[in-house]
Amino acid sequence: MAAGKKSYLIGSTIIAALGGLLFGFDTAVISGTEKALQTIYSLSQFWLGFTVASALIGTIIGAVAASRPADRFGRKTTLIWIAALYFVSAVGCAFAWDWYSLLFFRFIGGLGVGGASVVSPLYIAEISPARYRGRLVAVTQFNIVLGILLAFFSNYLIAQFDLGDLEWRWMFGVEAFPAAAFGLLLFLTPRSPRWLVARQKLDEAAAVLAKLGTDTDDIDSEIDEIVRSIESERKAASERFFQKAYLKPILMAIAIAAFNQLSGINALMYYGPRIFRMAGAGEDSALLQAVAVGFTNLVVTMAAMAIIDHFGRKKLMIVGSIGYILSLGCTAWAFFTYADAFHAAGEALKLIEQLRETAPNDLAAIQAAQTQLQQAIESAGIGPTVVLVSLLVFIASHAFGQGAVIWVFLSEIFPNRVRARGQALGSFTHWFMCAAISWTFPIFAEKSGGLPFAFYACMMVLQLLWVLIIMPETKGIPLEQIQRRLGITPNGTAE
View 1 (cartoon, rainbow, N blue to C red):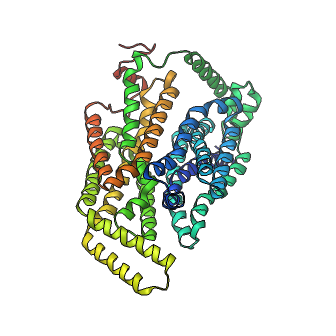
View 2 (tube, rainbow, N blue to C red; view 1 turned 90 degrees about the horizontal axis):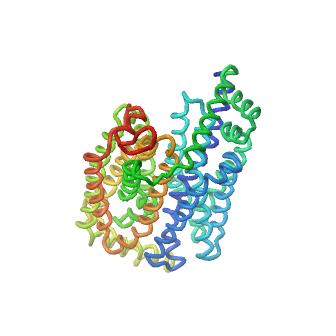
View 3 (cartoon, rainbow, N blue to C red; view 1 turned 180 degrees about the vertical axis):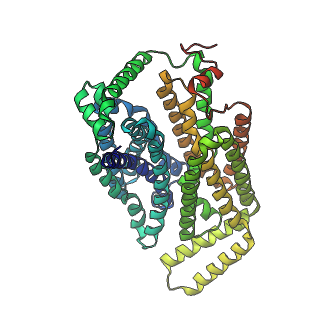
């Protein structure tokens, strides 16, 4: 491939993958704002959870509905609309005039996240030559994790400017800048050649393939292959998905997606700073510890992506599950053991914040509150350190196990004729459970800091048993052989 054409391919991939970066950013940015939102709008734990989950309701709808505009208007056009959704959400949240408007604009952002989760990797897969496809599609996953880190870091930086009541608005609003860049840069990318072929625009598809680096002699055969693939998919569209032949992969898809969220991963993504404050950390320290979580997630995700085809899916899931159980168990132990000290530290921190706002010149009262805080921290002993280290191990376990495996596994267990619907089922289950976990976490955490982590640890024991007993290894096994092992014959009937 000529250097210029390769650069164009890589550039188009990076631009499309910005949808994944904004996906990650929009997902994690709420973690820095939820405390202020609860105070400003006087939200109970139930309604705080609903506020966080409102974006996820949009995500579910966006993920389910995105394929229709992508097929009708094109992948590129749909991505431009998704960029507009991100932009409107960021600006709308920054200027939200009441709680209801905030919910609406978070929902709009959720539509963008759901759409990007489907259309960005789809577009990249369709513009990529087969020999580069796996690596280029992986750029989206990398950008999601990078976006999470950038959101945590952005929240921390904005908190350093002492913006007062405007702080949470800036945390939301800063996303408008990358969203605008994403939308504008998309005009530099080509349309999907596969979509062009489906629309009978064969000459334009040939021109795009040539621009993306397909050899001139191979363009006609590439288009013929795309035509055959589209015809095959249209025939498969009439096939019933929920039938006995596909029962095993359907149950496996639901299980791995549900376990992914029952680990509590998005409780940490959405409430990370709150969790660290629950363990006695101050505001800046809590935001900085969230940055450490995001950085660990990025580094371990990169390592896991490099070795997944060497060690296999099942081994990574076993190691990840054990890491989940140990880290969540230790986190729960710390919150149960040091509950009184953590509570005392939290009350002292609240008092210090109140005094600095209402009586900044009352140095004696502030000093007394700081002494109270120091005593609470001393009583907590190793508790805060155990929480931080355990959650870093937890995020590493997720990145090494579920984070690296879930989407690869989902793409391997379904036959080609129903693979898209199988992945859609997994995605729906994933986001539905994510909404449930994010909604319920503050409710359970208010009752006991250790309760949700103990529950997640128990769920991960079940996941480990599922991996050991039921989950098949798919590494290095041809897709057709995987189907036979799951009892599916080539004509789609159960053996």
